[in-house]
Length: 181
Picture 1: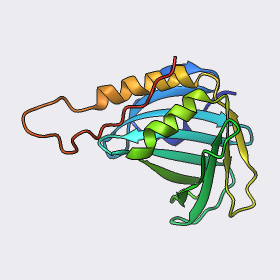
Picture 2: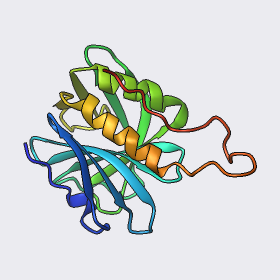
Picture 3: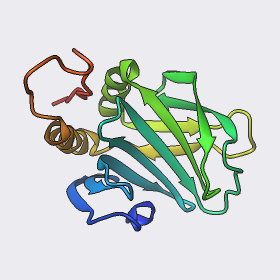
Picture 4: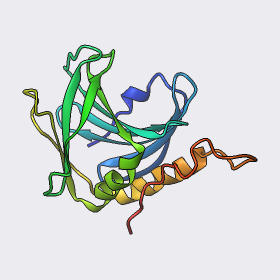
């Protein structure tokens, strides 16, 4: 299924870093000038999944788009994510509706990035559920996730500020996704 990077249309030049399976990695600049590294996949029914890092944030942003959604801005929704057959991230997060109405976002805290990306790379499939709503479960394949995650990690490395004199603003706190073979 071809992926439309429509949520990036207002942004500066988008560079596709890798494509594999149903996924692609990209880099771009946000409307407010932040460097962005991301991974994206399209699902049936006008659904799109983006995992982005906006420099210099110390979290990842999971964006879920659905044509036809009319979610009021600021609305909080529970989001469950399963990798493989486990209940990996059941009850872990709440998403927030964005101004467009067809999008929700989840911020994945720094301490959860490595376990999340490890499961993302290791699993063959994932499911996204919205337990407080009537939205059907989203299901997708993770074929190609290793290749795309490697490109995403290289983008993150390129975003990282060069070490300079003085202490790091957050010593030992970098976003370094695990890379499977």
